[in-house]
Length: 225
Image (cartoon, rainbow, N blue to C red):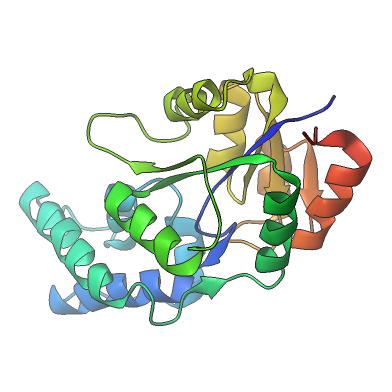
């Protein structure tokens, strides 16, 4: 199969953002008097949007009022908006990978469950030199991953069949999104989750490092115009 387009997840796939996410949420937890978590714990909390992140980080053994949860969500957004680039950086090898992908003219897009404003701001800051056909974050009027709606909108924008697109991500949410959209799911092992989760959720192949994706392009086939 010759694939003609790529959809990338953002956090844990292109961008190592976990420290800033953890610091923002821990700041909120401290303010509200709740226990904080180690940075590593947040690798299991992220991936399904801000609301779910906050709910996972809050104490599970307490019946926390909905109003408090909503305040925590707003507080997290406010805190993260001030610190999103303090520690975040592209993973090693991503710039080189993107340079080659852009040079050979493969259609690319980003689809994240991070709020749309943060997603676009972050991509503009960390990857201003790259052209993405679409950069899509979560929006109130659209369902989040693993619902395939946004992925399929990207396919339409690409003017490609979903079967001509690979979907690259680091969580089960990404792999399930790919399957739901009838795209080819590729899991990356440098992100937030492990091989067992990615395999169980449908990853066709697992990549240990970004340059492994170049081997996939050469061996398994990305259509080059």
